[in-house]
Image (cartoon, rainbow over all chains, first blue to last red; front, side, top):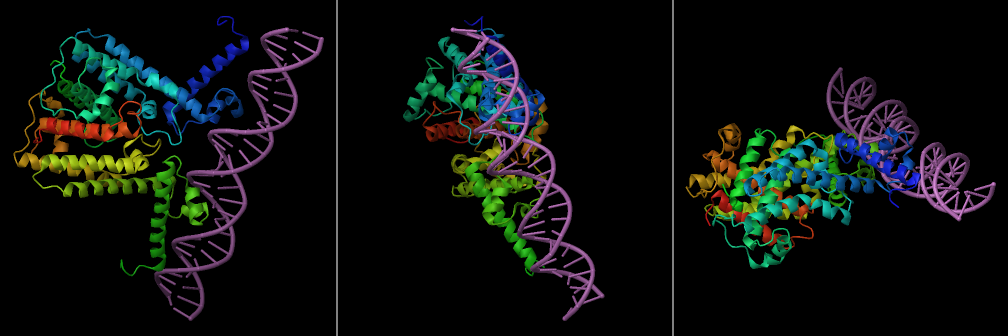
Length: 232
Length: 232
DNA sequence: TGCCGTCAAGAGCAGTGCTCTCGAATCCTG
DNA sequence: CAGGATTCGAGAGCACTGCTCTTGACGGCA
């Protein structure tokens, strides 16, 4: 019953795909606020009202693009990470970092949609949760593997995390099995530091100050790896 | 010649102030994309075209709000930092961190305007550069003071920064006199980590995972202080 | 063949940023 | 103090937006 779909259903699926394709191109050029249903319809030779047969509102189209974006980023991260030897934990971490930064630089408007200011009035539906966690899952896997292999040795320069965060740490621990609260806390530091640096670069906070962004990023991420306790 | 301003000039300045006040309230409620010149004019009992006598475009009004926002954040940071003893470098750093986080939580839409996705098509004019650096200046002062006092002892867990970043480090060094490239690099890590964490919390990346945000933040910032080499 | 659901098209509503024109109010100068 | 220049608010209008509703045609199914 999936191969013998009616012609109408097939053309409908095809149109939905084409609309998101056109919308993605518009998003890449004009950004989220410049994404117009009417412009998309115009480019497709449709009348604007026809779009609403496929996406009930502009927000639904945005949601589709957000899910696509998370999946594209997640896939880029997974692919980059897969090229490294399983026991090269630091290499896997750096591959993830570079993949995220490079994907963000290549798709700035989509990145802004995922990690920038939330669109006012827009409430991300639950469909976005799973795709949004793909990159984090890869990261958690790396740290978890390093813990399991006994290769994670965080330098003893930090105070113990307070007990109150242990319930949150439990939530994160589903991604990083076997990690102590201290390791979880460092992982959050590294993860927010990674995205903090990418966002600063992309959103213009480094303008007129830091020009060798790739080198700064590389060194910064290496430092976070050390703080995490990944092998040098 | 500034006291004896003509009546027209005074009412003009007053109107500009009132427009930005109303706009700030609208921004706080509806966010940047929901900020409408017509709505502001309506609330003020003006006709929409009259607004254009005072702000040539919507972007110019946004610029005014951005400058105000940077100044408000900078002032909050300066005040919080000033309450700490000059030789309590870690306390000063933590005061800055808390001030930024609390201000961001209190003014989420303004924070999004300053540190979130740039508004597409909007190019920040040079007027914003100086106010944007107020918080960074406070941070640089703290680190610079600690260096001068010989109280900055970064733990030797990081590799040396590559020579290529030294020109960028020079630019940052104007804010942190006497700091080595290594210290500069750690300062960038701490600064991006701070804003990365605030943005993650504010933009929803911690949803469904980390609930004790204040405690996580506190511990995280303490950790960054240690990485920087601030005294325990 | 006839029916029903799906579809594109068009008109229309309320809202937006922005421009232009037109009198009126205000300021500056002779 | 009078007149010309400048500035101002008001209104109409343009091109655009998201979204709704109705209408008529087309396709799939019994």
